[in-house]
Amino acid sequence: MPSPLKNVVLIGMPGSGKSTVGVLLAKAAALAFVDTDLLIQAYAGASLQSIVDSDGYEALRHVEEQVLCSLNVTGHVISTGGSAVYSERAMRHLKRNSVVVFLDISLATVRQRIGDFSLRGISKRPEQTLEELFAERRMLYTRYADLVVHGEHKTQDQVCEEIRREAAKSLFLG
Picture 1 (cartoon, rainbow, N blue to C red):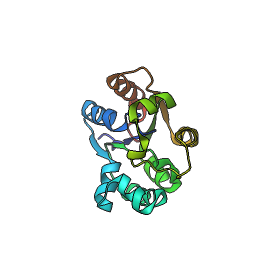
Picture 2: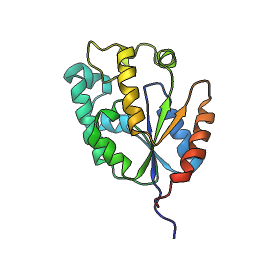
Picture 3: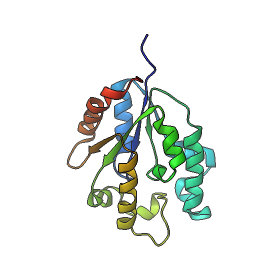
């Protein structure tokens, strides 16, 4: 009898392709898909940007931690919000039965893909620049990643295929 499947958890900056690649990967690998940003919005009854606007970035991070720690699934591709890595507790919970994949893109690509980041519900300190946020998060993404996939100059299908190839080695619990 096969061992239970692990999850594939996608982490990275907004615009790195977590949601889009996540759906492609779930279809290609016959896994279920969950986007934790959508779970957070359903849990809070508000958009990510509304949470940040009304209660601040720390409130968003708190709700995100609650949602991530309550997630109890196997055989899923899990697209996390870009700030998931701020919660050591949540990342420990996710890593227990998951391969964590950091979708790494450059700051220039982040800027190009997300445009006006003030509209994206990004969890950052009010005075923090995108450059500062990028540097801060990059260290955290690298810390938690089991696998780093560079998405620069690759199609979403190419990123998906690279994750499938590399993560397949550790998708089953040993």
